[in-house]
Image (cartoon, rainbow, N blue to C red; front, side, top):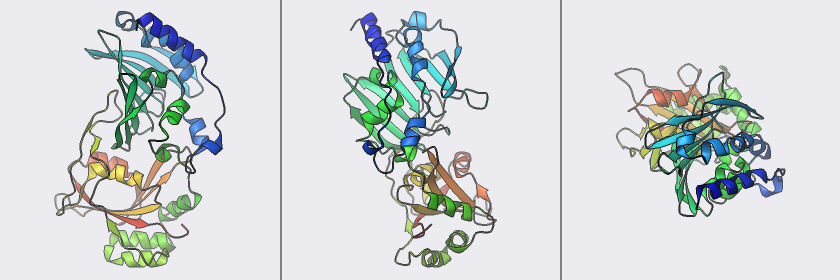
Length: 356
């Protein structure tokens, strides 16, 4: 189809974007209407610069000078970056005075330098840069890779919509187009007040009840039965996670073109590669799970032992609370996972208390 005709069609689509409210009755039980409505979207900015950076001939688009535009989601940087055979159209949200690639809501459109065709769109879903949709065109369909906390939750999901439909519509359109095939609860989920209260107790420095018993079990796994009893879960057994529900993880995140690689398998002698742990933890939110992570010793040092609770943030996104069993201090498990490549972890799943 002639590029001029395509541009005219896309411009028309952007002018008739519906501005309807989101009906809570149409959402699955664990999806938050507020989180979906509040997801940072800058559709009007994409519309304003459609003809100058998205549908313009590459020779023209590559001359575009960076601009900054105001939006309900904050200030947006619109820029072009040349990548040789491809170039990138960036819509980046300001975060603490900077414009990182991997902020929630950011849209990065990859175009072929010769033809100008859109070859990939990356839509970031979290501020940690580890969750995104990667959309690629295939004839009149779009193939989607759905990555959560660095783990490929679903790859090659085919949707019968042109790739142009996604970035010329608001985020709610993408949600509606994919909700039958993707579990959005990790990005748009309802927070659980009971779980958040349990986390506050666990992280307080003076935990009590089941929270205290969970921390003791992380420090001395032989005491795990005491936790289960205090949590009203005496009939349960701790489950060591030995199989992975995904086969690929991110080897780059928070970049303009993130890359996935095959995940290392579980080793009976060592456990799970730490690279796989964040994705496993976040997937545990729906099951109201607690985790104990026992790290292997590094250079003969004292091994790290953590009590961990994944949860939904008020914004709908995910959080992971982790406490060092040795001293009761909260730690950043995502940062630890990124700073300890090659380390293996024994990861055990436990149920949360009957009433967290």
